[in-house]
Image (cartoon, rainbow, N blue to C red; front, top):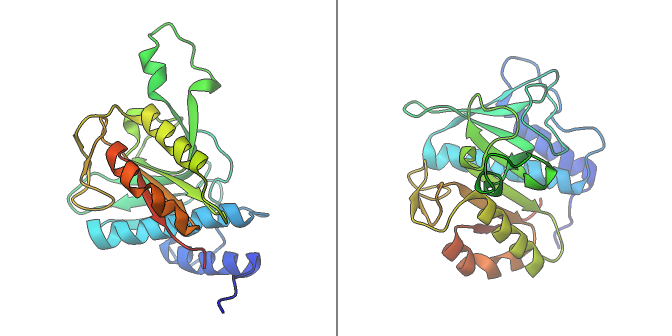
Length: 225
């Protein structure tokens, strides 16, 4: 029988993985003090996304620090006060991965120039990949990859509905081509052509793969260690 890791063991496992992305000789924890299983799972997913971008697309990740090397753990705008992962590529423009970022939904642009930018137009994603140098709350058309993470015993249908709602605030249902050759996906039924992924620790997330293909949402099962 596989025994789940304790929070302390989970934290240590993630720190050991993410330490490899720190530059220089120093190694320190990137996890906010008091982070619980849900936040730890987000970083577990972040490590998986970084690994697959390296294997399939040739990106090299480096952790860049703000005022500290701690990654953001509460939703808000992109801020250089927090650490993030710089994604370099020999032939493509650099990207950046940030944790717990609010973006400005497409509905804001559709309401016209007189609408006031208020909290109702903001939507949080657990992980975002944007072009390097983007700050503040990115617009929907600045999201290259968005990731939702669900560390739960039961992945429920309402969670899938939420993901489809996020997709609607990111893109229109039209054929599009992403920045990537194969991973996360090359062709997506979304314009602007962002990649939107849902990772869940419960295998029942796989029930939503087929409707996800129709709307450009990738549902992935990734167990917590």
